[in-house]
Amino acid sequence: MTGLVGLQLVTLFVLASVLAGCAMMKSGVLDLSWTPPTANVDGSPATDIASYRIYYGTTSNPCPGDTPLTVSATTASPGQTVKTRLTGLKMGELYYVAVTAVSSSGKESVCSVATSGRARNPD
Image (cartoon, rainbow, N blue to C red; front, side):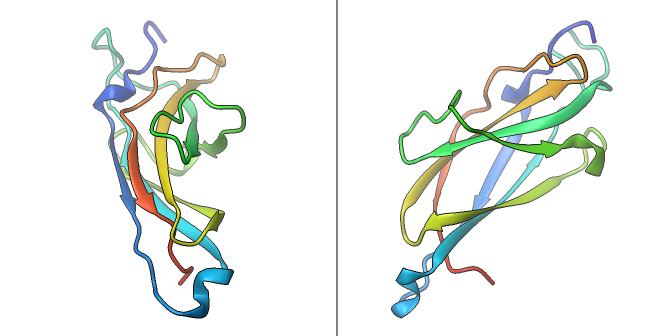
């Protein structure tokens, strides 16, 4: 990998909604999806993405953070949408989320722009 993947090119979508009622006592979820970049910052093909780190929290700049969720990149090819779910969140709480890409040699990209959503009742 000649240059670390530029995840500033990644579009990160957080799908979240709050359901009213007594569900506020349950753990909430956020469904995430993003499209990985197809090229590194130097223009070479992004063929060495081993995983993604998802940083999240209640502050507007969660990345980098102490305990990211790691998602394997083997579930999608570059340019193919990656989906995952954050669980165990406080219902109705606003969470900020950012993603990085990690190469097979352990190099981590810069953080994507953070986006936000409210934890909702699990489906």
